[in-house]
Image (cartoon, rainbow, N blue to C red):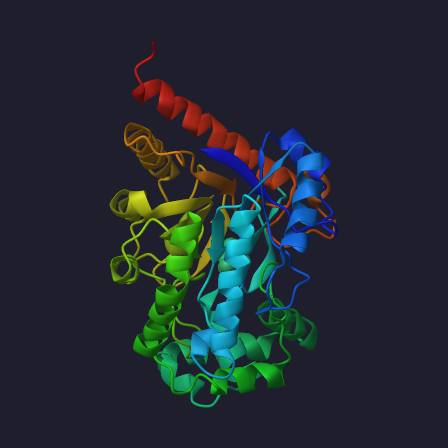
Length: 395
Ligand code: DNO
């Protein structure tokens, strides 16, 4: 696998120089300063590429070229934004960047309720407590009819919790949900959020899926021609939030998406933590079934329960069998080698990591610690080396 690291660009506290010492060789980044929907020009791409290469690294993956909300809703300027998307991916390929991650989550990208969950060892992780999210939805956002989306008992528990906390905690919870976690290109006020949610009122899962398929029918041929691979990211968490539709959450969703357009250019970002947050998802099975369409891998573990709570756990702890996933990916790379392909290596990145050591107290992008991710990357490297020793006959 190609070991990569997500870098948020020149303003990231963690520098390219630091990243080199983690052992990663590939960079995952995006031109975050370009507004959603606009074309990324060759000049802008080349400038960023040069910065990365000057540091002795390679720009391996774009995460993400964001999909404009108009495309997801199939309204407004969606045609123009799709044309810009096509130009952007053609430009990226022209600059030698062939893997593009994106997501199709309406309104909110990834969502947590707690960014400083304290581990016993003194480090901090990200967490999602469903009851707290329900409290936000029903009592803070006051989304019309929100109550109807949850069992009555859960709303009662959420209310008791909500009444027990102070304004400080209420604000932290709201900001955590609406300000946008790193990589989300949108950030909202409560009023904005109510309005954008309302703009999805006629879009259910099937409609959103139709809009995704329309987008793929337009964009995948361009990607194929440029030999570029798209990699849709999992919904995080893999269930509907705030009454909004979500369609990249389960095994069946992936079957539909991949069979709709059968091409390596229409592929996946297998995010073990995002899919794995759902107790109903069998991530190793997903890896095995869809291996030939996995264009990018996010490795992260979670401890989860059946009430839709989860926290991010160390890579070799938690509920997902990461060893099994790595083994499948190594086998897939061997299969690609047999096929004589020139895109054998699957880029992998340690997804999030705990805040630990010198990370604590620093203004890191939540989840994107230095030491925690470095630990994850080291574990990934060790796992891969062990799997290869076990399975690949030595000369
Ligand atoms: C969170 C990330 C997401 C991801 C996007 C992909 O850490 O995994 O923000 O980058 O959803 O488009």
